[in-house]
Amino acid sequence: MRPAHRDPLCPCDTGLPYHACCGRWHAGAERLQAPDAQALMRSRYSAFVLDDLAYLLDTWHASTRPAALEPNPAGLKWLGLQIKRYVAQDEAHAIVEFVARSRLNGRASRMHETSRFVREDRWYYVHGELR
Image (cartoon, rainbow, N blue to C red; front, top):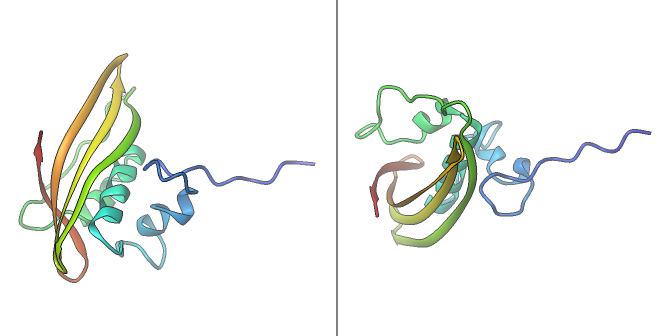
């Protein structure tokens, strides 16, 4: 008897299964419908981990969105996400401060950023300031 298939844990470190966490914002009926900026931040981190470049571009505000993104370099390993601060400034603006850790060719790296988000028809990433 084969063991039941288990949904992997979401890369964004909530401890939830991927399909019940960021996976629902990445695909299906709820695609692109993260309910707040923190959920969008987590789903964007997961999209970076999974190299879902289309999702990253679709959730980037048109005023700052690049024309294209490069896939992860070979050997890049994402190690985790920590949300340090989430501030809903009003119904349409929010800030998320986070640290994302990775390793490439044995060298550890961390990106500490304060990101700004705006809600129009849905939430979008606008830009971030590295700390």
